[in-house]
Amino acid sequence: MYRSTGPQELRSLGETEFATDVARISSLGQHGLTRCCAGIVGYVDLRIGGHAREVLEQHITASDGRLRGIRNGSTWHADPALKMYSGAPRGLLLDPSFREGFAALAPLGLSFDAWMFQTQLKELVNLAQAVPQTTIVLNHLGGPLAIGPYSGKREEAFTEWRKGIREVAGCPNVKRQAGRFRAKIDRFHLL
Image 1 (cartoon, rainbow, N blue to C red):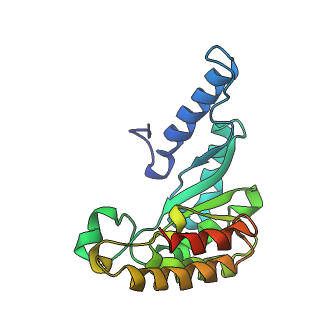
Image 2: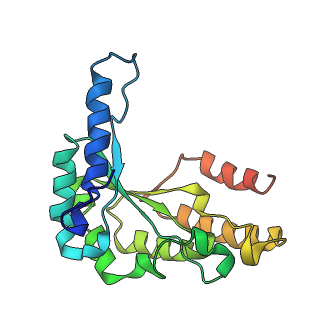
């Protein structure tokens, strides 16, 4: 769905345009009552720094105002067993150019969807504290690991994840359901 031509930083506009077309078709009601893609979370490589705002504005326009946030996966781990799940460069959330792009989200009313491994939760806490006006949605329960270096080390993995997720829960701009977030942490241990 990405555009196949044009500047690299604008190719993800194709995905936003596709989701917007789905929303338009859905809004006609010809396929039932469901209204698909009323809100869109798209992708912009925030490492483009100061240029991010201009690209984000193009996504907002292309989405007919449906764009609600941006997702950037930041999964990284040195262990070869996790290589196929590691898609980002090491330390993405700490990268100064990424943070410059990230700072453009809140003024445009956009949130950030974060996906990382449990070993990177401190980086998310650092980012959330550095840019507290930006709403962050933590995906995939903060990436608890049970493979690679954590294979057969369930208690060790859970202890590390639990410590990190509690730090994340202390950041007011990281969204969670009040009261239920802690219960989910405790239930995860029982799974």
